Amino acid sequence: MTDTAPTAVPIPGQITLPDGRVELAPGTPPPSGPYANDDLLPVPAARRTWTTYTFSALWVGMAHNTASWTLASGLIAVGMDWRQAVFTIALANLIVLAPMLLTGHAGPKYGIPFPVFARASFGVRGANLPAVVRALVACGWFGIQTWIGGEAIYFLAGKLIGTGWTDAAHIGGHAWTMWLSFALFWALQVAIILRGMETIRRFENWAAPFVLVGAFVMLWWMSDRAGGLGPLFAQPSRLGWGGAFWKLFWPSLMGMIGFWSTLSLNIPDFTRYGKSQRAQTWGQALGLPTTMTLFAFLSVLVTSGSQAVYGEPVWDPVRLAAKTDNAAGLLYALVTVLVATLSVNIAANLVSPAFDFSNVAPGKVSFRTGALITAVLAVLILPWRLYSDPRGYIFTWLGLVGGLLGTVAGILVADYWLLRRTRLDLAALYRAGGRYWYLGGWNPRAVLAFLAGGVLAVGGADFTPLTDGRPIPALSPLADYGWAVGLGTSLVVYLALTRLAPPRPAADRSPGPGRNGRKPAGSRVLSGRMPLGRVRTRLPDHGSGHHGGGRDAHE
Image 1 (cartoon, rainbow, N blue to C red):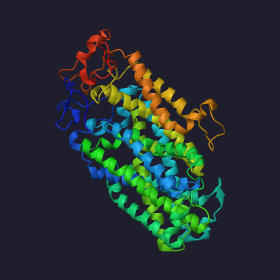
Image 2 (image 1 turned 90 degrees about the vertical axis):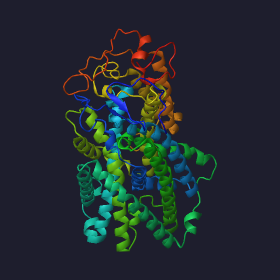
Image 3 (image 1 turned 180 degrees about the horizontal axis):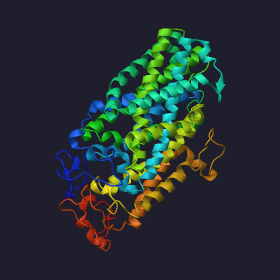
Image 4 (image 1 turned 30 degrees about the vertical axis):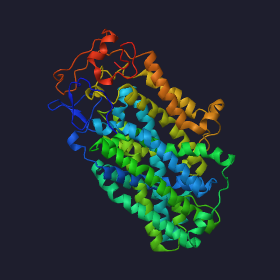
């Protein structure tokens, strides 16, 4: 993937390197003030060192996890056979790869995280809207994954200690020892994240192959119990390939897309460390769809085998592993679950909200503080209820997540690719009164597009088991296509509103990006009374694109 912006006058205060990456010009003081801190500032090009292997390993570590396993096994549990489940997941990951690469482009090019990237379209303050939505979704995911990891500790300790552990007194529907296991795994993850991003990178590099080997061991064990691979492939679909399957297919597809729609937004949090666009593009293309499809294939075979061996599909791999009588096999399986859960939960569900919450109050909330906020909210969301049933997990939780986050993705893609042609002013992303300030720091067009897309995407959804009924029953026909409806609606509405009511040029009254209050040489002040027709010559960074009548619809 390459830059598509036409040749234009360089933006003051930043330079473009020969490979297309952009950074602050040498000698330019870094942005400061209420909208900047060390965790949100652009990563210098010299520190963008992640390679194709790093991104591939990151995806192997994130894709090969217990929640991914339950995606495929959950589809078996609701009636699909292994072919239908693998087909659904493979198609979903090919689809979600597209917005993943489009939004990920801003990371290696500018070195900025997702909440700063969102300021270009939502406004310097308005970016808190998608950032907080993304963060709350991540809190839910962090809680679900932590509950899964706690289950692994609970069953492992039960095998080692005995019935005194597993038959302990119940509190809130679960043994107190399960709650203790949940707390222990929660604390372990927080300890890792507090050590920083480099620790996460090293952990992902060795966790990825370990988890993949563990999945093949699970397959070998189940095929041995079932009497060979034949019974694993022979389990029939309860749906067939007729209307019953297709009725389930579309909401399942949107749910599978919704699983990684989280990362399709905040992937700049990782790609900002990319050595090049090639590294992030190939790393993700090789890592996401291939590993997810392979892991889905292993998952559905093992779950089909459990149906042949136990008479019903066991969709939770932790409970399935706990059925073995071999202590060494159980230990290996549950340690694999723990490593897999740590791998995805830290990378996918703690890094992003840590940056997102930091963006809300950069001067007060650091990356580590944001991670702690995430970990606490993850408990308050009651993840054990979200994970209790495969239908609620796939259709309610993932459908809701996909609908809302698809809406944000549509706005980001429309703004960055179709309007700005991938050109951003780094310094202006961190200050009030600049070109991304819009109306009091908010871009009303993005907010309206988000509301329109969000209502259509999830307004008719069934929220069982969280609550009964649908908020807007008339929109129920759209509920099965939430992610696509949200993305398409917000993209079209955002483009239409920007054409009909282009933002007026903001008067840049800020002291500039430097800590000493001085603007770098060559910077210009825009007058709020400047005729719109003259703006293109002053700020040529968005290209000619779709604009008509000599106006630049984005200042």
